[in-house]
Image 1 (cartoon, rainbow, N blue to C red):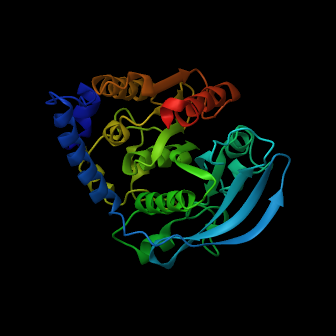
Image 2: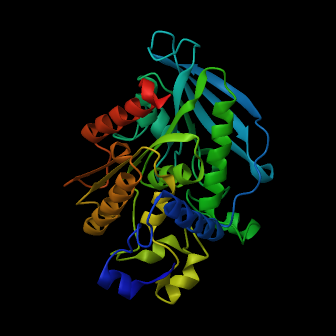
Length: 346
């Protein structure tokens, strides 16, 4: 594995199924991809036991918003909002349990509040909308956002993290924090542990599909405007070391040689055959290379078909921009409902 960017952009995507003859062959290739991915994100520390503190509760129209702080690795804590539907909202099974969703926020300084409160931006309040559909929603702050902004710095400034953890990555940090969130959800009596999903837009979108590839407890994932391959990217260095938010510092040296160790459709493929919904727009100014994104989606679709799971993959493209518009959210919610609410998902 590993690609020269010039040749990648000239010759097109590496095929996910090259050299793969059967499902066992794919599983062996998947293992190689996962091992490489873990190397570049800096690994995943052993998680700590579930522990959380309730800071406060707010009664809303059809749910209770619980402000809590849960423990994560290396002595850190994650503030989050948990939205719990009232009894008037349908969705419980015969054991009183509900499906649950991790609502991962985009690049916004308010973090969890942007997706889980009425103060959130237009087309970003997907956590608030999903609790009204009967889901228990957990919306954590990612490091550098919400209540986790480093003192004295603007949001999404990651330098203090790397001063403390120079061999790690914010991608790995977010992944393990979100796994700890799953641990929390799985500890609750009102959550069906076999029906947990993840949803996100932009920054939250790639964190959602990253998580789905690393943790099989995610049974369905929605990624809006967050898939960005190196292939065709006019600024691939945004994945490496930057002055503000650094995702994968180890990739910087590779990019300096005009090389990449993997392509992101391979990372997305780690989730297969988990039901996955992707949305992207042709006028997305942040990730404008929609043709190349589309080629990645076609590769993923072929993989799901190869695995006999063609009904579990959906990719939707419009002429829209970097947004999560109502009509696309509606399709995404129907997708989650199918895989987290209907009998075949249990």
